[in-house]
Length: 383
Image 1 (cartoon, helix red, strand yellow):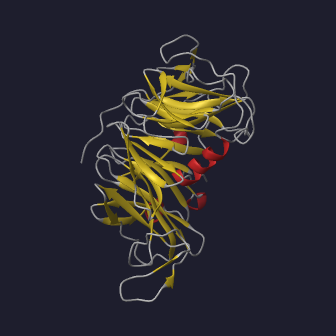
Image 2 (spheres, one colour; image 1 turned 45 degrees about the horizontal axis):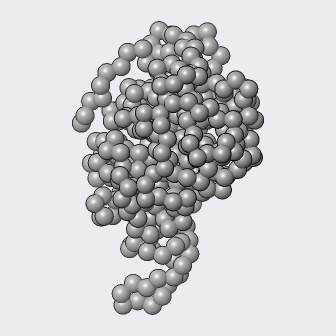
Image 3 (tube, rainbow, N blue to C red; image 1 turned 180 degrees about the horizontal axis):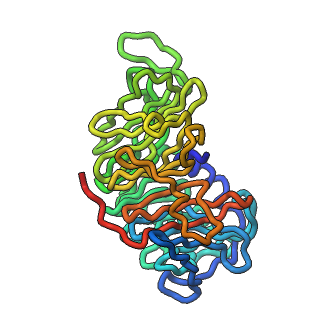
């Protein structure tokens, strides 16, 4: 199972962003060089395999918007993220895989990665260590951000969430706001500007120091803070709100990793027993998704505005491993694959408001990005 927080992903990017690259096509989003992709139609869904560019061996995807546009990069070798091999950034739009341009100042040896895309088609990412924003396919450095900053999410108000050595931040048209330092992870941002993640606590109060440090509460003596105690939390307009814990949960870590535009929050609980419980927060309550899924282990990774939840679970209950859950109904994602295809989704990544499902096929020994799209879709029902 793949559990990615912005903290882990961004720190990895900071470590490798300056590795040698080169070979990226200097074309605009609307320019030449796009590769038409094959769409395999089925009765209700169609499947698109996202390949590496010619001459490369592996394709990686990281994000998708509600228009079904996918961003990622192509690399010379499979699993080459930690090595100085060329990375070729791309956008998949309307069935065409389009190379993304580099900065005009790029020497051609920088690694370029798109990291997030919104419904306006704005893309944020890195060119080497430089935070950049692609607008209409043209990249430009993000004003107010130096090479210490990594953008990782962007909402439809064009506000960017990211991480730096100073902690997590929000970027809004050049204005940078640091999040409170008690945020151990800031994993998602919705269109209302609500940040979902986790904060360090001492069991009752927020802790404003790094995990493992010592802090004082009024009227008490310094006490060591448990280095592994984290609570799921939301941040809006500078106000931090803890999300409730599951009842009778012996948890070590609790964090929120996704939030939709109707206020539903998706997250995980890591228990003392080593289990992973997926949690849905709605209407002020924490709901144990493991129980609803009949699973002892689950990894819910994405939620759309209709409340459809995409994730994976253990197969102990005899049901689907990769699923979409909504209102008590569990759908096996791989039953949606068109007949005649040998592909499947082993590692789910994202479900958007159209019901497009992005993930990886891993069953043949290599990670192959696949996009599963409904032939017809309805606008999400806002609750």
